[in-house]
Image (cartoon, rainbow, N blue to C red):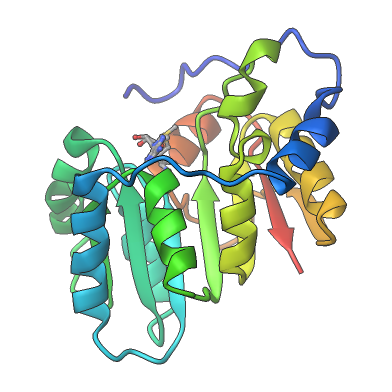
Length: 226
Ligand SMILES: C[S@@+](CC[C@H](N)C(=O)[O-])C[C@H]1O[C@@H](n2cnc3c(N)ncnc32)[C@H](O)[C@@H]1O
């Protein structure tokens, strides 16, 4: 991943996807009956074992990549247990390297390789309730035909809502977050959308993608539910 030359997201959409509302209506009437993949079931079981009888705050860092944000969040929320989840074995495998360079000593987090689609379903079934849920720089899938690949355009978004807590989504593509805000509003949740001020004193990028976009002079945005 090189710094300073990231391309801006290009789309053939001119605004919020016109089928988004209909898609959400459809998801509200259907149930995902696909079997859970065994590797995600195992990852989920290992997280439950790690949590033990933990009764305090639980934070998900979904699609965490190498898990740099998971370390930072664990340090920012020392009273919570933070769970970083990513499906890429390669990215999760690079975590220890970032751990060393970050001089990390936090014990209140775990990183697992799993598919969040199944992981979220299992967490909902377990009646898990989160204090915070971070979804940082999800793949944008900017083509109009890819709407159902964006998290807010997929049935998984209902699981995200069911998990509760403050949801924070970050992206360098404003329309992604405007669409996400549209779906949140439709489902009865208010949120605030703003540009991230990289020049604020003490600001540090939360993820490698955030760092890369900012080094390329792109504006990054955050959407936070209330
Ligand atoms: C653009 S990267 C962002 C990574 C990290 N959050 C960051 O900002 O550096 C998107 C990440 O989402 C992960 N991802 C995509 N679909 C996923 C899924 N279904 N389950 C788990 N991780 C997924 C990818 O493996 C990738 O690491």
